[in-house]
Length: 52
View 1: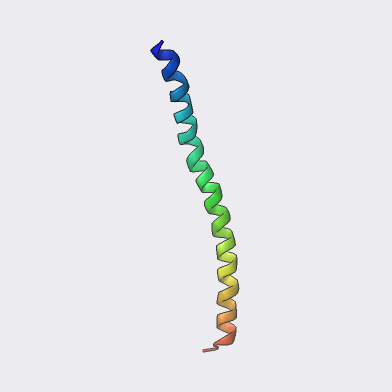
View 2 (view 1 turned 30 degrees about the vertical axis):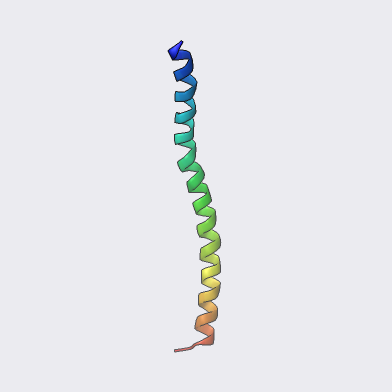
């Protein structure tokens, strides 16, 4: 009886523990790419506007 209840919970927790970092990593990569592109564009503009 206890095993029937514990096993699905254990499985869900394990899959969540494995999926969460992967999900975060994917989201982090996307966010980083978009931010870095935007940041580069702003940096270029700043450098062009303020030479020296």
